[in-house]
Image (cartoon, rainbow, N blue to C red):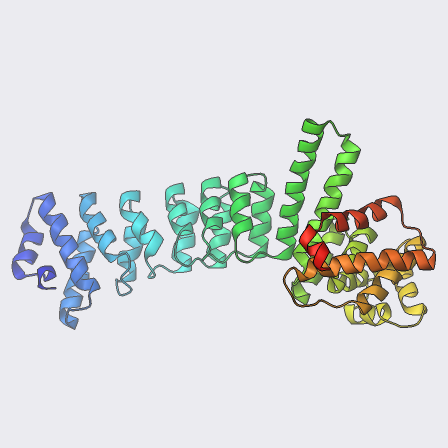
Length: 377
């Protein structure tokens, strides 16, 4: 690395040289040498003092040479890093995107006071804390939020994600980036499903001349099926958060709970019944699985489930208790088929009568299964 060594001649040229190109070259050489960690303690102190002179150089290319070569150096003095980060964009962007020396407080101050280009650079950092993400979301700038959501390494709180959906939920680019994130809170994922369903509703009305009411029914069923699918396999805390969100938006209905039971999502069914009845989930679980006739009936009554649906709910719970996942490929699809067939058979034996929409739903679930799944079932 001798080619990067800063000689006495370099230092003299740095102090006396009027040529911009020479100062740029010397600044880059010093920054590289500093970053490599090959300087003695006294040499490092000298280099830091030279940096403090260079950040005040009138020529922006000298300052840019410093920023480009110090952007990933963890030992650069913080005051030097902050000065470069607050400089013109050509100087600041490398530091803002890569420097680990900048603190959350530094970044938030810059986000709140500087240009969109600088905010985008912050959003692209290898690691972005949730407080910095919140500041970026609060800018309300589409390009900033798009860069943040696309950054899988950025920690984004549920509150910030909800605001993103509020402000940019109709933006297809941001929506796609949200969907592609490895982890999304259930409540945010559920809201995205709702947005897509609304778009589908408009498409059905405009292209196929379906009445608004029919299209709304189809969109509602699509949204419910997607919501149940989202909840499948989620942990208890996420499911309970989801049902609270559904209830606050008037969408925790008897229909979606019955669908959850039919899909084998007992956790969603239990949490939803507990939410509607305003009792702990453990209490609801004991009432649901009570082998006698009283538990589920009392729970449905307290939850406000229409009385005619009680036999259907009991049938679904009984079948769920009797049916297991087999652990193979497309396990959930085969489970659903067995579940639906048993519900239909049991309902006939018990003399139950489902409303037409529910029966259509059950039959459509069977017809929608791939033929190879149906054969194996």
